Image (cartoon, rainbow, N blue to C red; front, side):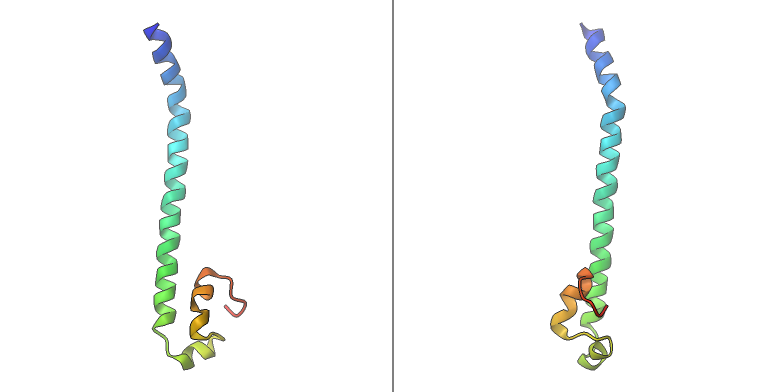
Length: 73
């Protein structure tokens, strides 16, 4: 009985580790994307209204521009 249980665990381990690796990759990619968005937001928020206008943005457009849903960016 113990042999069967250990065999089943050994067979399932590679699939489990593969899924864990995939989840970790997606999680770390999400963190990287969030950091990039935060940096973009800080950069745009630090600009003057005149500089934002030159980019085709208004101050209230910054969040949408950061998310990439603004047509002018």
